[in-house]
Image (tube, rainbow, N blue to C red; front, side):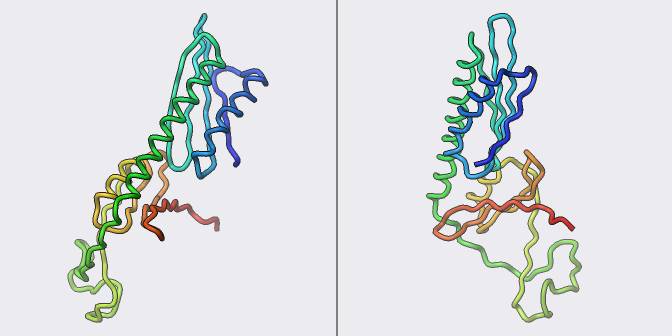
Length: 187
C-alpha cells in the first residue's frame, strides 16, 4: 500500500524517519485506502513531543504524546492511533449489523421551487419517473454515517467536512455499507 508521510517542525534523522514509516505502516492492516500522515516532532528540554495527523478511508484522526524519548513518544502515538482506528471500525461494523432500512415510496410531486406545472423527469402522468428533493449538507463522516443509519433512504449524499469531497453512503450487496467518493473528471 502506498502512503505519504510528511515531517514538520524539525528534520528527523534517517533512523527516526525509517522507524516512523515502519511504525505507521503497521496501521495499514486496518485501512482500505492510501494513508497520509503528517508528523510533527518537537523537543523542549527533556520533553520529546510527537503529533501525528492521519488521513485514510475518509477518516482524519490526530494523536499526540510526550515522553523523555522521541521513539517512545512515537510508539505511544501509534498505539493511540490504532485504538482510534479500531474504535471507528467497530462503529462501522455495528452500523452494518443493523438491518438495512426499508426504502420509502417516492412521490411524483414537484419539489419546492421546481414549478407546479412541470412533471419531474418524465412524460406527464406516465408515473415511470419520480423525483426526490434532498438537502445536501457538509458534515463529518461519523455524522453522515449516523444520519444514514437512522434515515429511511438506502443512501446518504453529503459533502465531507474534512476535504470538501462529495461522498455517497449506500447499501451494497450483502447488506454492506459502501462509501463512494466523487471527483471531477479531467477534461
